[in-house]
Amino acid sequence: MRALAWLLALSALPLVAGGCGSTDKRLTKAEFVERANAICARYEQRVQNRMAGIPAGNEKQLASSIEKVLPVIREGNDELRSLKPPESLQGHYDRWMRIADAEVAAASKLQNALRTSDRKTIQSAFAELQTRDVDQDRLARKELGLNGCASGSSG
Image (cartoon, rainbow, N blue to C red; front, side, top):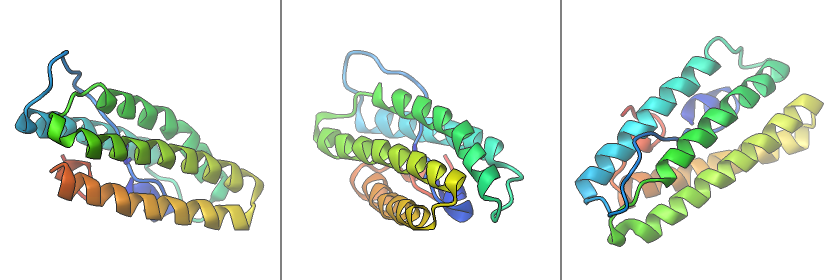
């Protein structure tokens, strides 16, 4: 939720995370974009606050930080998932959320590998996070119009 350029810089994980619930009816595209971008901005700030001051080369501290941010990212993803995008965006949105879930799984894998200093798995998890980040950013920007939910952007 990407949720997560800050972690890619440290060792990987885009932020995709959320806020602002929804009603039973579908949102207009403008409402959807506004709410999703606001969710992403809010959770990106929370993640950045929890990651502040972590040295890039310290694997144990990075693993501990990932443990602290994963619940925030999951919470944001749940908030994003509560939105009801326009029908025309639903397929792209569902794919975007599946990538967000896969990023959380890869971040957990990275966290475990960092704790055990498993170099091969660290490299593999990091590569997976980078690939998913690119896919998620492309979907956010080009298919969903969510510039505030792509890495390197602010709400």
